[in-house]
Image (cartoon, rainbow, N blue to C red):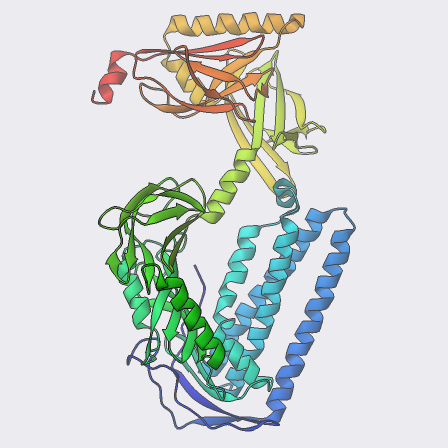
Length: 615
C-alpha cells in the first residue's frame, strides 16, 4: 500500500520570474467537478519565484546528482571485483532504501512546515521540486541495482541480508513526488520551462501546469484506504476513472490498457486522447474498496500539424478494409484474480459486448469470446498475467497482478530442501538450495547448536536417547529455515507422516517397521540403497490430494516414477516430491520405483473416515 500523507488545503498560482522573464498566473488545467481531482481552484494569491530560488534549486539538484554518481561509481567498482557480490548488492540496497525513506520523511516534513506556517507557498513548492529530482535519482539507482541482483543467487542474496520486499516498499511511495506535475514543477524552478502552475492540496497533492507552447499536464495523488479487498467492480471503476479526465471538447479518451493489483486492492487504467488537434495520454488509479480516484497523471499537447495529419491518414488506411473500433476493452465481470482462480472477462468494442474475439494469455491464444463477449479462464500460479484482445485496429490489454512478494517467497522456499534421517542415535541432516549444498550453515537441534554443514550441506550429530521430538533450525547470515520431526521407534517422521502411521492398522505398522529393518540391514551390507516413500504434505484420505516424497539414502530422489494402485501417478521433481490424488477407496497402495529399488506406502481408510465426508 502506498504511503501518502493527507494534506491540508492549499491553492497557489506561481508567477515565475527569472532570467526568462515574467509568466502570468493561470487557473488550473482541466477543471471538471467541484470536488474531484480536476476541481477548479481560483486564487488571488501569487508568489514570485526569483532567480535566487532558481539558483538554489539548481545547486541542490546538482549536488544530489553528483552524490548519486559517486555512489553509483563506487558500487560498480565493488561489484566488478567479483568477490562478495551479494554482500555488495545488499549493502547498496540498504543505502538506496535509506535514501528513499529520507525523501519520504522530508516530504512529510515539508507538508508539516507549510501547515505550521514555517514555510511560505514558494518555499513549499521549491521543496517539492527538489524532492522530485532526488526521487528520480533514487528510482534510477533502484533499477540499476535490480538488474545487478538478477545475476546473483537468491540464496546468496538472502544470506547477505538483501530484502527485496523492504526495498520496494521504500521506493514505491516516491511516486507521489515523481509524477508529471512534480516534474513540470521542477522544470519551473530550474528555469528550463515557463508556464502557469496551480498547486493545491485537498486530501492529496494536485499540480496542474500549462506551458506557453500549449502543453498541459495534471497530476493528482491521494492516499487510498488501507483495505486491500476489492469490492467495487472493474466496470464501475473504469467509469469513475474516465469521468476524472479533462474534457477537451473536441475529442475523447479511449482506454488502451488496464490493470488489477490484488496485493493493494486497486485498479489502474491507461487512456489515449483521440482528437483532431490534440494528443495526450493519461493514467488513473482507482481504489478497489472505496471506488475513489487516488492517483491521476495526464498530459495533453497540440498535435504536430503535418505529423498529426500523417498519423490520422495511416490510421484510416489501417482500418479501411477492417471493422473500425475506436475502443476495445477487457474487463473482469466475475471472479477475483488470484493464483489458480477462475475468472470471467468481457471484451467490449466501443462499449458493446464483442463476440468471436481471440483472447490471449501472456502472448498465447487461450480461446474466443462467446456471443455475450465473455471468456472464462483459470489463471496460472504466477504473480502476473497479461490478457490481450484484438479486433481490426483496436487492441486491449489487461494486466492482473496478485501476491508478487508472497509468491516470490514461496518460490524461494520451494528451492530450499532440508532432509533429516535418524539411525543408531545419529541424525544426518542435508540442506540444499536448487540441488546444491548449503555450506557453512549453523544447525541447531531443540534450541542447542550442534554444528555447521560441510561443503555438501551435510552434518551428522548425536540425538539424546530420550528425545521424543526434533526441532531443526538452519541459519546462514540472514537466511534461516526450520523443520520439525517426531522421533518414533528410532527413526524420524514428519508430523504428517507420524499422523499417517497412527491412522494405520497395527499390522500395517509392523509391516512397515519390518521393511524398514530389512532396508537398514541391506544398507549396512553396502549392497543396496535405502529407498523411502513418505507423506510430505496434505492429509491422506479417500479422494484427498497429498504431496509425497521419495528419499534415497536420505537424499531427495529426483525423476522417480510413483504409482498409485498400479497406475502411474507422476514423477518426482528435483526435491524428490510429487503431488498425487488418492483414489476414493478404502485400500490404497503407493509405490516408488528406481532401476534397482522399490518403496511402498499403504493406506487403509475405515468406514468411519469415509462416512465423515458425508458420502
